Length: 407
Image (tube, rainbow, N blue to C red):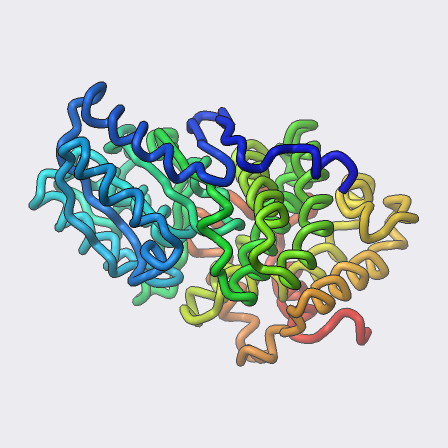
């Protein structure tokens, strides 16, 4: 925390990737500029809002979005039925509402679930003969979508600045991910002031999602110096600022840097992609939709580190340098580094393992099959730094049933 205190966190800046991201305390007010652009530059007069039940109001976003839309004469309908681990049925319900209204753009307000769902809606508003199951089972390849505006209210997913979206297909226990150029949001808002009311567990879980994004993006077969550089900075910021945020939830500077870490982690994995941890978590929360995505990732992370470290230890030693300052990146350190990561997870209040949330040895075969057969997860498994054999996937699930610290 040497130079960070010198940055004025109330100075809103534009984080440019493919999405123009308004970032900083007070960035939500930039929605007035976005609304003006939609109406005056793009001729958009009707939009659909996609949110959860109440967080869009509790965080304060609605206090700006509603009057801005009204000021610029933009009519709207509002779908507020998105839950955690959203389903294709939710996406279809929102799409139907948008089609009937004639929505010309989609505004997602919330964390990963509403924004991911908004991306699916944006595609399906263009492909009126398709539904969300067809989209997530890859029965067609979209090349266009309605404009997407993402107003982010958590610091974990990075979905506000990337081309990914996720939805579950409940009857198949599938949780596939899509990735298309057409679903980069046009504009995003990252305002840490919208996040001070996040519950402690959600603060932990979303931040751990970002940590997994960069752990994977730095170690896939397509990792680059860029994805690794962003990974190092993300990890440093998370290790510095998550404990402070948990101790003082209203600390805007701490929230600011966790949000920045999340956003650059999204850019990191947009470039370096993902592998084991996400490919293996999706079956967990597909089978148990009540399981928070970040918690599922946390339970898998130490075992994944243990298995991949012998091959990518040099990179992981640098990324996790704040936790393992003496690590040299040699294969013999794999278990000790995995233990250090698990101990850090325990220290920030995440101590559960798979057995604690109801999984047993008997579930390993089913979970492995889902990891191998769920649409899109084969891409992630093709990028793993060690071969993603059935035996290796089963071994990682088994290692995640219990603490690696006790081995």
